[in-house]
Length: 402
Image 1: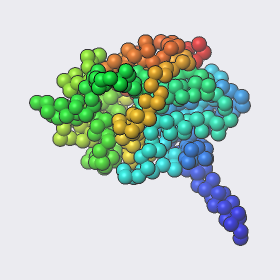
Image 2 (image 1 turned 90 degrees about the vertical axis):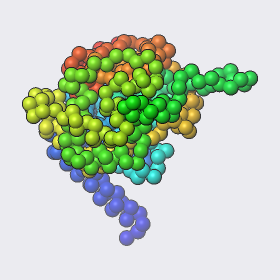
Image 3 (image 1 turned 90 degrees about the horizontal axis):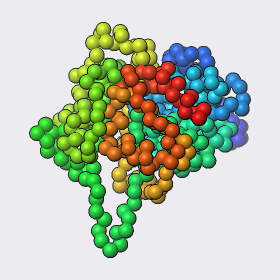
Image 4 (image 1 turned 180 degrees about the vertical axis):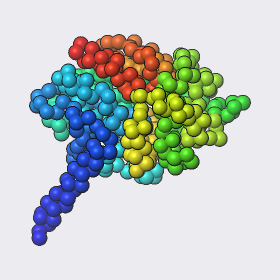
């Protein structure tokens, strides 16, 4: 057998394994028959798992949906069919570091640079190209998927013809120091490092969740949670949803320790605790779980199975690609704006809207030049497309159709 024959045999077995993995996902997750699961190869070094709806008819305009943390392509299951019914080919990938997508490094000391935002944009661009599209009608990002979607529009507006940002406002690329040749640049706001130090000095010492997510111990704390990964995820999703009635967000005046400490403990954790210990205190009751129609036990089992298999490090790598050289790289786009139609959707009970003071306002007035509207949805917290899928579907179609 020649080397070429061996390669063909290996590729055949690899394709079969990926097809079996996608089929297993379909069976495990009980997706509606109109949503299919498959693998798409050679996406910037990844074998990318995607969910698709509206794929039966060729030539449809495409919509790309980008999830956040700790989520999956599966998080879009409730809006995919309404979007497809309106005439679109709807594509939701498990992004780099998540789910059934493979080819990424899950080691804390591994290939961190592949998780930086420009490379995540390259992942999405590669998927769009592999599917045979020169451009898409919209890219829609939720949570950490929001800045990826935003930079898709900043970097390649010719490909991503509109952008919907969800739950995480985009205040624009990081600015370069300006007109500083004759004087040292003055910092307009406190540095993140000084704020983190100040949080630890509060009478009730705290730490910012993104700071915690960058630590070595964060993955094991959640993956090996004492109450089990399923209970951890149930508590985490509940705590950040509208079901936790204490989620009554408001604007913060500045990025300072005193202001950040006003947020719930899923954003400003007690200093001596991890996320698992934090969220378990807010575990919903059996009656609350039974009443939770937006995330049934069967649906929760999909997340528990996937993160139980992969852990969280892939998603946590994204948080580590901020500051330092990663911010410097994004400063290349300083002054650039999103010049395609843009909108924002979030739950009215979502603290994510206000956790970065000023970003919500900059997004609407400076960062986007074709603003189409801000929508804060009643009865939804952070998981807006799962908590209120009908309203989110309506708002997205209204936006995309112009």
